[in-house]
Amino acid sequence: MSLTMHRATVPVLARALKVLATLLEKGEAHAKAQGLDPAALVGARLAEDMLPLSGQVQRASDSAKGAVARLTGVTAPAMPDEETTFAELQKRIADTLAFVESADPQAFEGSEDRTVELPTPSGPLPFTGEDYLLGFVLPNVFFHVTTAYDILRHKGVQIGKLDYLGQIRS
Image 1 (cartoon, rainbow, N blue to C red):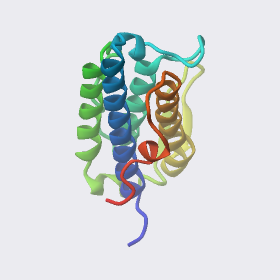
Image 2: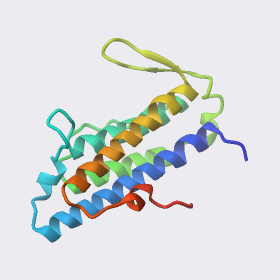
Image 3: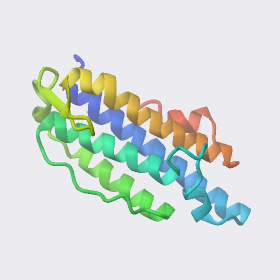
Image 4: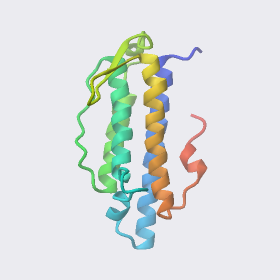
């Protein structure tokens, strides 16, 4: 089986979102077990100029749903960045995962060569679909999932590399 844009996008993003959901479950359980305010963990940051845990989840979600939308030509669901609880973050992940996994594999055909424009404050950044996926989307999603992991680990949540890797075989 050759590697298709669908296969390089949907399963990879779905796995990252599932890992993120599991990390949040462990974070919430840690807060409860330690008698900590869960909101403090949701708002925790590695550094003052970085987004909090909630922002990391929101950006991972935005990147995943934006990738599927741009590569297939559909509209991504709107999700305002208003989550302040673990339950709200889990719902966002579940909604994003449902959108990602609902993508029609045939809609990805030819997307490797399709022009994708990423809006930025200084104007659109043009990519080929392949360059967008491999050079922007995947590194960006992994950055935000890793940063969420790091925030939780820094706050004492007992997670390790295998939690980050998630289910290794499908």
